[in-house]
Amino acid sequence: MKDDAIRLLEEKNIKFNKYYWKVEDKLEICKSEKVDIMIDDDWKIIKKLADNKIKTLYFRDTNLIKLEENEYIKEVNNWGEIYRYIKEK
Image (tube, rainbow, N blue to C red; front, side, top):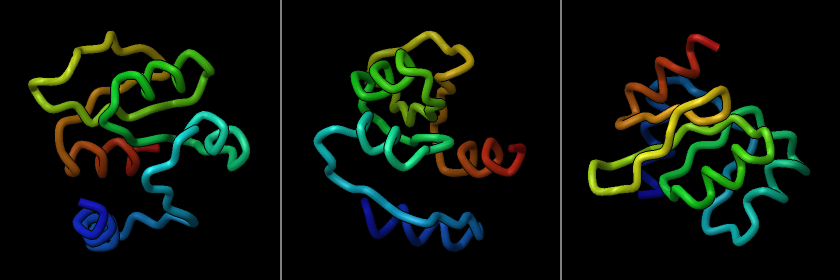
């Protein structure tokens, strides 16, 4: 999945300074790196980040828990939605 994600981001010309994969404490990374938007598919991580006022894109498949959207949680279902969201910003 990592290689596919990087390939898709590069194809859409979405630039990132750093990538983090399989990090235990994503909240700490987001704070220390001053992350603008975090993309994740784990509802527990999304909730924790949103509770700490970090904007998130919840990459939710239909079988995952639904979270209420707010100013810190935006649900997305595919890379096209992620691209459009980031492009608007």
